Length: 138
Image 1 (tube, rainbow, N blue to C red):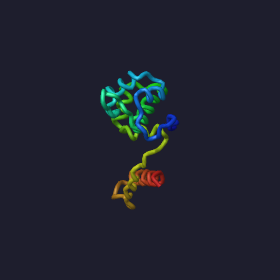
Image 2 (image 1 turned 90 degrees about the vertical axis):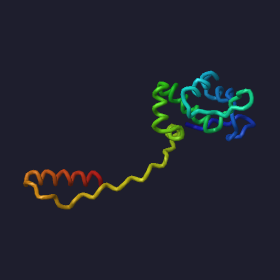
Image 3 (image 1 turned 45 degrees about the vertical axis):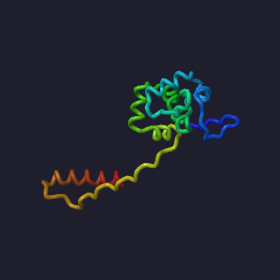
């Protein structure tokens, strides 16, 4: 996802009102309020008179929700499952094309050099399987 151009006279890190986010995404304001009830990760700040102010991370999550629900055809339940498994930051990063740093892979366990005493046909087959696995893991 690309970052939307900031509004004239507004810094990219500035808070956005619900009307600004609504206009950017092309969805009515009540849809954004509905998303707040279905996705607990979306929590804009509320100030006097219950006015909503969306932080940049909230706006990024709204963009991700919009893309999943409207462009990719996910259901609300499907997006809830994605958020539960990946978290809001992970989901936004994945959709933005930024891979989160993967944890370093553990080295494969060492294979024994010799097999225990087994009948010859079985030992030969197991040795062949071990060698194929070693080549595949290398």
